[in-house]
Image 1 (cartoon, rainbow, N blue to C red):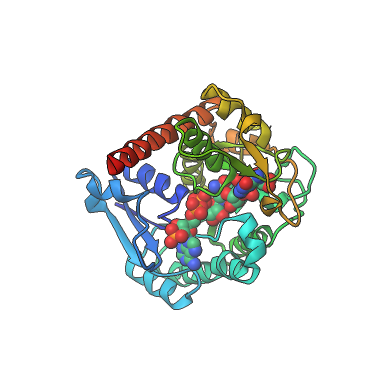
Image 2 (tube, helix red, strand yellow):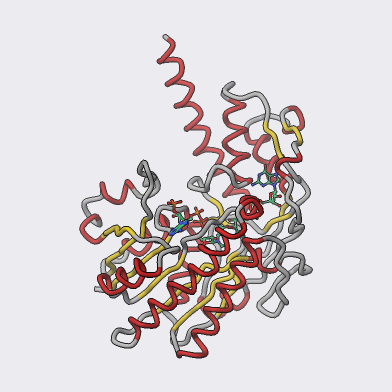
Length: 337
Ligand code: NAP
Ligand code: F7E
């Protein structure tokens, strides 16, 4: 059996990656969870209910801010593959909490790499780092592996630090360490405060009469949005190659926030202009205007291609959130009946 350790297992990507690895009969999956006052395991609860996989799924308490917890965990699990997906991943929030973000995202990666390096002396380990297209920041599109980085937020600067530490550990210690530079990827499991999910949740609640307005920031920003389920396959493929490398993972299409709004509302037979209001609270001190990735290296080397189109992604999220809104409406009606 192969054993994988995932940080960020309770997040969007962690949950899809755990499912994907467990769909292979030869994987045991260990997830790092941090302590919270109430459990936040909604994205992975279903795995524990699946009799075919639950015996191969284990959670452990640790934290990327706590080096000792990471080295203890590494000794207990002795994983063959480590996927570092844990992060304070919200760009806007990173302007409010720059030091915390740098600690967890930047130094957290270094702490994990150190624990991996120590284990690697007695047990071979492969390492995946969740790097981000945010590292390109204001660099002109299309962004490729050769494009110089120009980060525009504390989050992006911290990710860039993690990226270079990953490259350096590969070069200095001959570690099998890959950095996946992933462009935005979304799903029905996307956190509610990221723009795509905020739109699909808001629009479907408006449709069901549960909300009147949707308050937004910059509608002109453009992103290369893919489906998270497609992107976790690329993470796994990177660790199955003969040599470690860095990869851009993207769809090669870019769309504005305004377009995302238009499509979402029109799927619900609504016009977004009747419901969307501007609030400067959602603007960022420095913005990333256009992201558009070139994934040709991943396509050629990994044989990876996205399967879900942009339109398919929006539809998937709208259908999911419409069902949620209908259930919320039903529950509210039931409670007041
Ligand atoms: P997400 O949904 O925000 O999940 C983040 C995960 O990190 C959660 O499980 C969270 O745990 C965990 N975490 C936060 N602080 C931690 C700490 N101090 N120690 C350990 N774990 C901690 O993020 P995602 O969208 O799945 O993204 C996965 C990774 O890819 C992140 O590193 C993100 O920065 C990066 N990335 C994402 C995208 C994208 O478009 N989604 C693109 C490029 C790169 P809690 O549940 O306890 O909060
Ligand atoms: O914003 C604009 C906002 O927060 C996208 C993270 O996963 O992807 C994500 O970072 C765009 C920005 O994602 C609102 O100004 C307008 O231009 O969904 P987002 P992000 O900042 O691109 C990268 C690749 C990561 O690595 C990150 O971890 O949408 N926007 N109005 C808004 N954004 C939000 N959140 N809320 C608004 O109301």
